[in-house]
Length: 288
Ligand SMILES: Nc1ncnc2c1ncn2[C@@H]1O[C@H](COP(=O)(O)OP(=O)(O)O)[C@@H](O)[C@H]1O
Ligand SMILES: [Mg+2]
Image (cartoon, rainbow, N blue to C red):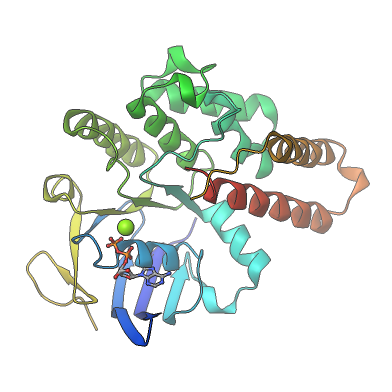
């Protein structure tokens, strides 16, 4: 376990070229998140919340400044090492569930654990426990299309927590649900993150949800302010069945290699695992 902040961002700057114009979306953003802290990232649409989460999630480069996750400086990591940090330290929840459509609820939560090296009984027990805690004990064998929007988002919450990440990054996690369902699912999300002693950075434009978190940071004019207003320091669906089958085969292969681990060195096994994780992320990012 790390003792320092799970996230330390310093003077982060990100701009985009739109036509001839350079839009400065993040103009020197700094923030720290301590273990167990749940922090709201509040701002209207277009203020740069997703841009900040994508940078912090090591999903996009192209920024200036420093991002440390559990003490690891992002700029010093190569692509495989960034994937490893995402797999081991981060959990992602998006506005749309991005569940794998051909896998049931339990399997969607088991998969990330198998890739990270858990054995099947332990992964299934963990998945069932998380889904049970979210009221889905009777829905384990349902596929995403057989679940309601609120249930789909609960499965996405369980998946994000499955590998006990130090930091959850959530981008409008209940933004696609009606108000009462959003309140319920968000309450369960908060309760589970606290039970698991995780930390979270949650982007939302909803003031009411923001007030339920430990701390509120407001993104305005490319800068972060705490609630008092002081600046804080300076798809396209690709559901090709063949691709899903290929991913499934890759996951099984890694799992079998781990069981018969005399066939590969730990380094080779780790390399294979990171490749598979990256392929799944790539697939998932093209869903919904
Ligand atoms: N890849 C991109 N290329 C150009 N402009 C972008 C890109 N991503 C985001 N932006 C711009 O950055 C601004 C912030 O976007 P975003 O981070 O999605 O805001 P939010 O999540 O708060 O709604 C917007 O003006 C958006 O148009
Ligand atoms: Mg956004």
